[in-house]
Length: 112
Image (tube, rainbow, N blue to C red; front, side, top):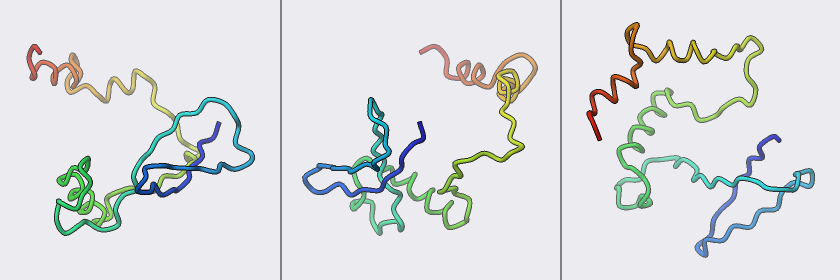
């Protein structure tokens, strides 16, 4: 099934009512509530919602200003796109010929 993307506003009563398009299939769905990115960085961090990481938002603002932040994704892949094999993905994660970067990270963390 193709994902349906809608924009909505959650009111002070924390209720959300959504009217779906008539061709929406019925049945079980997964719902993800994701706040939209703020258009401007608030002047002080006290005006941010409690779940917001101010350092992350500052980094996002800098990346957006430098045009390094991707905010829109195409739904279709290029015609010449070839997904990597599991072996190729494993090879990308290797720093040397024997251990993966995950192995090195776990080794550096030590026993938990």
